[in-house]
Amino acid sequence: MNIQENISLKNYNTFGLSVNAKRFISVDSVYQLQQLLKVEKDLFLISGGSNMLLTKDIEKLVVHIDIKGISIDNENENAAYITVNAGENWHEFVLWCVSENYGGIENLSLIPGNVGTCPIQNIGAYGVEVKDTITKVEALEIETGKLVQFSNEVCNFGYRNSIFKNEEKGKYIITSVSFKLTKNNHNLNSSYGAIETELTSKNIHKPTLKDISDAVIAIRKSKLPDPKQIGNSGSFFKNPIITTTQFLELQKDFPTIPSYKISDTEVKVPAGWLIEQAGFKGKRFGNYGVHEKQALVLVNYGNATGKEIYQLAKKIKETIFSKFGISLEIEVNIIA
Picture 1 (cartoon, rainbow, N blue to C red):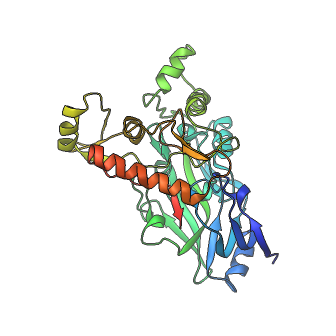
Picture 2 (spheres, rainbow, N blue to C red):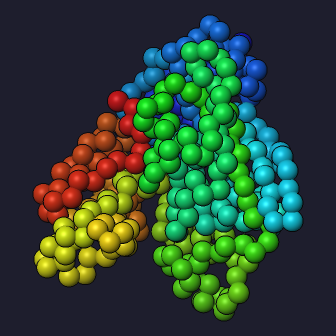
């Protein structure tokens, strides 16, 4: 096993933070990972590095999951059953599905990260969550090195949540994710957010999978910074869900507050709107700040530290609670 020492993780996290791994290894097969688990148990896992904020050097053995491969397990007239290894880039997988006319995840285009991390926080965007297409997740149990399969139901998916963020956190390494995608009669979701507006501007009234994907990509590019240009981890906070009663009270003081109905008793409020109203949108603090086009995104302009960005996140949380009585929840995994 090729374990390296004192390796910079700047290129392994989308915030582009300069932290070091005391020891580092990249694995490209399940077998290699199983062999590693025979001698090492205390691991720090990195895949696409898109959902983490590193605030310090990593003392544990850093394991970069680079297991690649896509296989079609089965298909019929209506559906394709596909297994994707954890190290595959998520957006590239979405584009491949669109090119093959496999439907279900086109609204999740341009989300950063790799396939192996998509179930952990149940990634979602524009009215779609990945849980609606996942059939199973395969993972290595760190303690035993055995492969374990988790059905969709067992994954206990919730809003940006799963069993892997809660009771099974730190116990498994996801090696592959299996999906059921449509081959015809696609259930296209174009009514959420600005997708319909984007399609209309292009005079598209009967969109294809590619049309939806292209629209999402255009919207995301117009609002979100490219991590290759400005260090960031996408949406830093979850959109809070509050009671309808609390929302109606807030509406008295803030008549323009937007919301999305969750149930008869709950609504979702855009965290970006709250942060913008609190005056943080576009605010820069030296080497870090809040993106000028999307208040949900915290950015590293070049030489920021993870601690500085984390302090900004805590300041935003405190301000939002003071102003609106809403407790924002951080979506990004804080390594502190």
